[in-house]
Image (cartoon, rainbow, N blue to C red; front, side, top):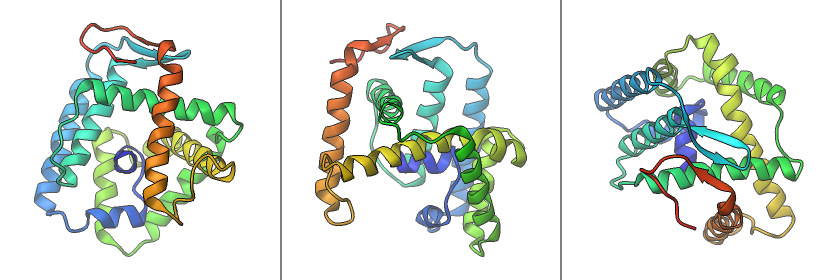
Length: 219
């Protein structure tokens, strides 16, 4: 589910975009149109601190945007599964913890490195002959309300930094024998990685602060 979220909120890699190629264009357009309107409404609201992970804040806007993207991803992939706000917030908290853990273990990617990666991904998408991938990416950019330059130079690098940092963390965990190799045993990897994330959350849950009565995470 996380990979799909990244494909919408960051930039779609050519291979990832192919997963959506069988989706009806009109239906896809409707989903993007709805997402764009939802994001515009979210961005028009006042931003307040919603939660805190260690010393990093999660704002109400960040959570609502995360929720909007996740719901859109499920529609794009025809996934019939309703995630509660509690589940979504926990997933977002775990995302933050994974990046923080990458930083602690010295494998986090710098923003400068992410900027270079963003431009590389842009070149790949611009040079591909897959028009469906290009159209999908065009929609991804349009929903943000940013120009193409703003998207690739300001929006994408920050999100790529998180994505690449977590990828580096996973590689280190595999090298250290904490996680099995996904290429050799994907099922065992998925189970072990899920357990790792749950353990990471459990060990930090006492330090997670929620500033709303609407959502309260359980230990």
